[in-house]
Length: 578
Image 1 (spheres, rainbow, N blue to C red):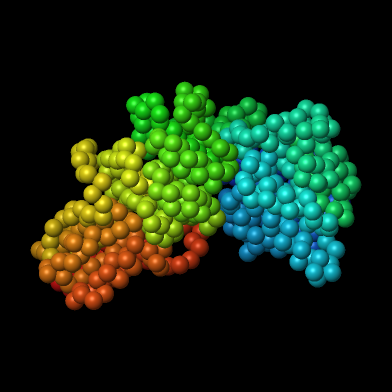
Image 2 (cartoon, rainbow, N blue to C red):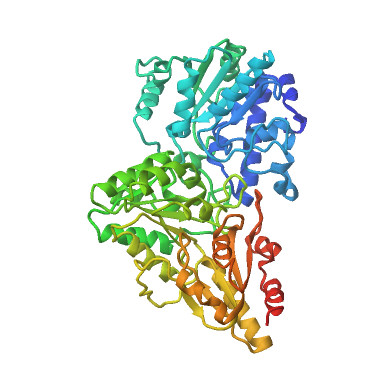
């Protein structure tokens, strides 16, 4: 069947039995790809039949389907002409893991963050109305995404919108981990009552509502979509699905099989065995040694080592607010105000959603919350929807915040200990997983703010290197010493929220050039602060970092090299000043 599908129009030629065969073949294609290169397996297996039915009933791309997060868009991609990205290993890279308008006219947005589809759909619907057009606008949103404030804001507005809008709630009873929050009691009641419970959050918002319990029955899915097609008012189509559907070991452990590395498609075994990294260990030690310790996370507990058994162990000290990063950050301010030292941690890319809470709720009130950003810079997540290359611009310029950038695991631990025991400032830590270990305890007093660490004391040229770029700076030092018998200066700035003015005031005495290295966007980044302060001094400053672009599926080391941060390229810059 899959060989016959070149576009959604080809679905309409198939019988129900043939569509069921197609569903199985799509499921096999998803497993074929994800078992070899990793990806989001469970969410996509849950929507195979739903995706077939949507494209069978609606006329994409005239009718517009918007996928929330879009990590469940693999079946949609296979149906819309991109099956080779799932069947041909040589073409896997041609198809991304998220919707992308550059790939297909059937994709309308680059989407990788959650809770946005209903808002986007409302905007498309309003534009349709103003143009006098009549197409269906469909937002597909997972139950986990409903905990995000933006989704609820949009559903609230949809309650008074009086034109065509179809909101498909894909309810597989999971976010990444189990869902949290009161609205999931409503979803549970609706599932158990087959959609007739009076505890209906959607009708409370004023929306029309229909329910389908058999979310993998293609015939019934087609019937329900035919029923709501061309609706004249917003309607919720609540569909009960199973995460990991069709693969026994995935259905039994949906949290583990949300996404991940390649695996053996027969038994689910992976070559990569989970270990406790130094960041996770710092969290466990903090809770073990502090009865009033509190760690908050937003829907991705396994990213910080809080697997189900760990969550059970620390159930009084660990809070997963669901996909609601803003709430996690604001809660940390409340907890800090009431006398404890809370920690919020998730992927750096998701903290972009919390700028107002970081600024207004935490920093303006100067409450001593600790924010641990995972994977900022080029060595974090590398899809253009998930990169975190502007963290310094986001946090480094907020008053009261102390933003720390460790260059070793020992520095990270000392910074974390400082942050979670002081009461003067909110502190953020740029926690990068690939920091080296020295084996030497860091005794730095981080309460003395904005002091550089001089790692190598030399002359003529000073390199100020952030985080894991310190290793490149040290290699540059060795190369200059070897080739020119000159020792240059290597500086760890430590604080991304301030500069060491005392040191910079005398740097021109022994140096002709300062080079700043950062693995994020250099525009308005940390290096610009150095250049600005040294602007009236007799010394040159070169800022090295990334251009202001959305980078996608990049190799971190190659990306740094391409942006003039290879050791060889930096040596050529230095050579001019020696």
